[in-house]
Image 1 (cartoon, rainbow, N blue to C red):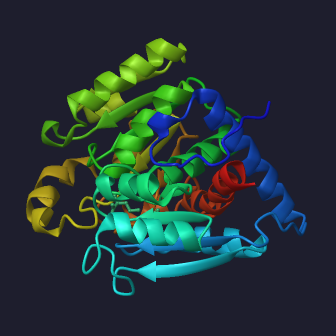
Image 2: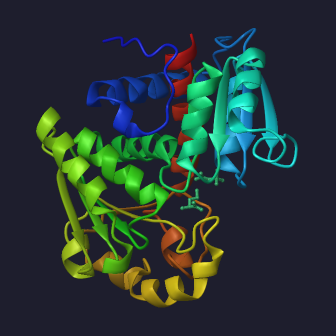
Length: 315
Ligand code: CP
Ligand code: NVA
């Protein structure tokens, strides 16, 4: 089934229905197969993409840049050091200029107001490549990886371990509610997702009858029991360095290691991480390098899912 997402921004998964997310995942599967078959396509020929990044990136930047360029498009990378955004020029003006020069904008940065403002003022599709609160493109890659391993998403038990209120955890929570997973956010109470977001996600489950289950807990044993996937992320996200000491103390018990993985009582549980990882902190080297780690499939799938978002919204 086709959906008309042309001209739409990708700011948070809250803006997309379960069927639209399904549609994006299906396109991603198709473009991954094309890439494997070395099929040449030029879907973005004659189009330009501004990649405006305030924070560092390896996977997200290269996904946007290669996915767009390989399809004949012209990506232009603009870091905060290169442009006037927020320094000499206000957001509305930069956005309107980019809207005249480009066909779409990929943004990574701090505030959601910035990415929302770019969408509002540029008049072209804007893609959220991570903000302090959300990382929606990441979740499509994570779900694509889970489907590749287990064949489906519905009812799969996905456990996020650690800083359960960070951008990745928030977006996994929303995505799981929409796609019918059993999502468990496990971490110290101080780092649980905001009640407002949890409520919104329960409402989504009701509205779309997705059958998703949502649990927030600090009980590691209960959380990981029977898990299909254990997911973790860095304990100190970009821009939160001042909280480093507190975080390391709070999160030590939630490190994903052999002992924690054994509590799943399964031998086919997979390990996921959005990367970059601090090995020895949120995950041991043994687990991330182990046979059940799918972190590099996940990283590759960033590119296919990002390409899918751009195809759905641009051509
Ligand atoms: N997972 C992810 O967003 O990685 P980068 O920070 O390297 O883009
Ligand atoms: N939570 C991490 C994700 C990096 C991809 C951060 O914001 O730094």
